[in-house]
Length: 306
Image (tube, rainbow, N blue to C red; front, side, top):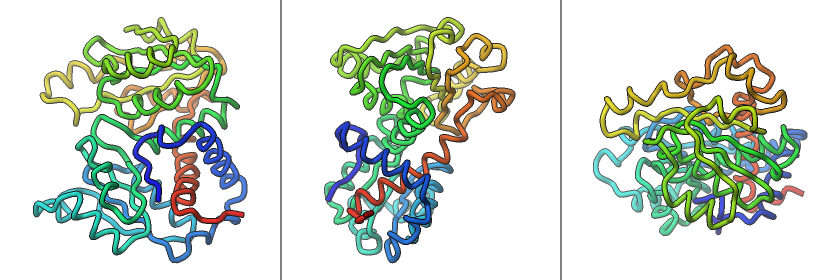
């Protein structure tokens, strides 16, 4: 039995097979419509989510399966003090696979250690968000045709942004990928990402503050919101939240084939006027997220797709 805690839980070859499966699901949805008949996924979300939770639920229903779970800690026995370990032991009696989001780093890992069903980390604090990374990889490969030979700009909250951390860890395994890290000093990537991931893998990267400086050189811009829930005080959040706003004027500085991705939700870091730009791919990302989660469910449940 396998779990997914990090994108690194899959080798590059396994990732390629997963993305190939997701691509086939996109092209031939009817072929997969009943492969999970009689199966159930439990979505255990201890903090708010729209896209990730609904994406998992849509993925399982598209495969013919069913869904159970909760959408906040307050609506679960966690409010009574039940531990993550006890919750997953109980849920293992009801479901065949579980997706867990938790504000504490490592909580899904703790669950996986006692679970009798596969556990998927659907986001743990500021640490990892592996299924968003799978979504990002599928989006990039589908729209750019490759995952190597790319210059990628990551902009905004690079300190607390778990999507950024997971994506960097995944992409350093591909050839000739360079990174431009765009953030204010206070929200720079953690030292462990800089030293243990980028430098340890001998990847080219530079850190800049001005988005305008980076835009002309990018194949891909990955925007992130400044996350109010990760700040200890409101004053710091208010000071940082409007540091970057991508608008039509800034997009004029970017190459004609640059993609704009965003894990969503956005607040105001991407102006709505950018939505009509053909380079804006963040809503396409949402659809790719369903396909890749369908592929992940099939893979972890070891469903024969032949």
